[in-house]
Image (tube, rainbow, N blue to C red):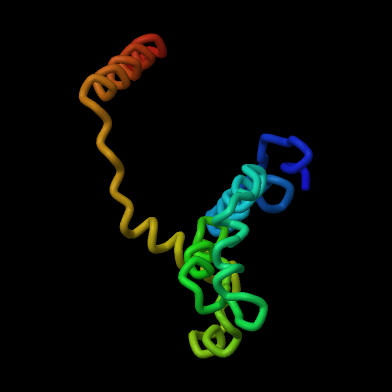
Length: 143
């Protein structure tokens, strides 16, 4: 609601205990919520496609829209693309172990930490950083 009211800053992502501690799983959960907020504040497109005007005329009042290709396309847009939140039916969720949001986020953190490969810095940036460290070490008398 604050985003819809104009707030444009999110503070404290990943923080718990009033900012005393940091939790990477909470960071991922907060990130997903922030992405959903960004989608909402961009607004909902209102046009012939999103209103499904042609589909309404084609289907009429006696049929459903669930099997229509456009319904599936619109449902799969960004707002529904979550990684951590559970959107499956209860039976599927239970068959897969009934994990909660925090558990899924924590597993994702472990996966990211195990597979992350940073993009190497450009040579000129590495040289500049190395020079800054040398200058500071010299200034502090540890070089």
